[in-house]
Length: 373
Image (cartoon, rainbow, N blue to C red; front, side, top):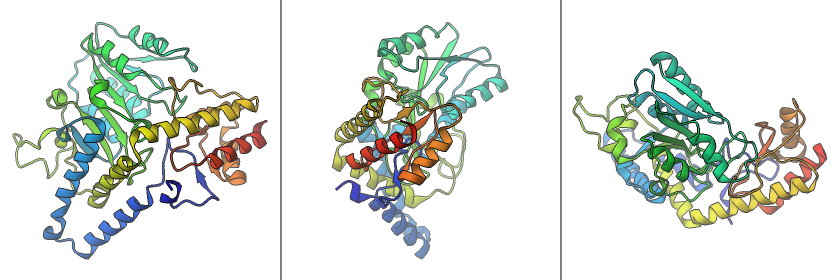
């Protein structure tokens, strides 16, 4: 039933949710319908309804994440959200930012750029490719925190290795030292049943076009209420207000960007409703099952999976080790010869989600066997 909610054909099966997912069929149709509505009548009077639709979207997403609507900015993607935090936090020369070396460039290189501009110090943490337990990961980061550390910027789940970080434990350790924690959740939103309040993060970023299977060019930035006043917006446009003292109400100040795709913002609410209908916990369990089945099948071929086998240390990202220099070729052949769309990231990366079936997993394993075993 879930498979039928997507437009892709069996000739080209997407298994690269870490990069881009097809939207739910109903979400794509809603974007088309609302875009046509605007094109038919782009008057202020007709478009007035989109303010209410956007707020309904905000409320649905906030409830799923265990937070308040005023703590969410609906931005364009994870990259933008990461950079809002990067550019907006007040830091002084000599302050230190600790990063995971597996962060996305917008949560890694972007900090190095700011450090070069403003005299900050950057320290990168390397973790084992196949950690033994969550405590080993916690120890790696805690040992890097020092008296000048002001920010710990992490990735919830690595798209490079598939390692899942113990975020709650890392946040607790950092907060005990007065350190701000920003988490890039691009590989978590829509894949894990999240409670951001329970995790304790100071801010969290994500994109709707990945595991959430929502519209394109919509993302979120969560900033805990206690931190909204600490972060300057990157862009100020109509929607902020008419003067410096205008109050955009909470995290909305981070989404004052001028003209937006109102249809996509509204359709995000439908994607959230569909996740509610299926159930975020069921989505998480299904992805875990598919990924574990995939990893076990590849290991049974006698091949090396470089992603941790333990579901406590990984989730939907599965990376098979391949001979050096062959990842792109093998990924392309898996698509051309077996109809499975993966990625040459860290090896041969396959990321199944709820629109994938058991038959898709079997087909992916058979393809890997034909190419590598």
